[in-house]
Image 1 (spheres, rainbow, N blue to C red):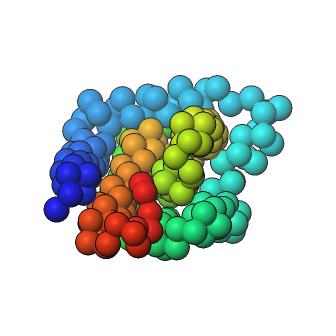
Image 2 (cartoon, rainbow, N blue to C red):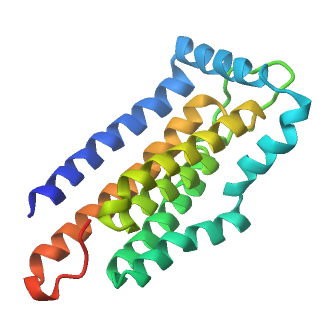
Length: 212
């Protein structure tokens, strides 16, 4: 197994442990639950009516319908670069990250500490919007040409932060929901990188399809 694949898989294993620890702490450790609710209360307190239209618009970029169009961009970029397997991998990462989040929400639903005047659904962990934003960020970097990756990473990190800040200010999710969503996206991206690295090693050099 290539070193890059082994490193990615090891990071994915650590990420899975961290994901479980965050869920447990956010739901079953009293001081973490209290801190989570306090931070959400602080974000909600930043709400300004004049900004609601903007924050709603930014947060809604990761609603299912607009996200489908945004997710098509890195897939198309990879195809245009002549990297079909990268394009397929990116599509799988985006789909599987989203589906994992939607599967976990009802399975792990549990009551949380309440924020007065701002009820949040018990099935809010992990955040689907945070998962979508981070998976789009990571997949955009994977699909981009190497010389553009630092620029793409900076721009897409700003996008993920803007989306997450917006729905926190709107009171849709607890901060720990965001961490959970980010980790799920990262897990699938790491698995995708590992798969591409293994594939590269097994192909003849002249036929190599992707550089990640």
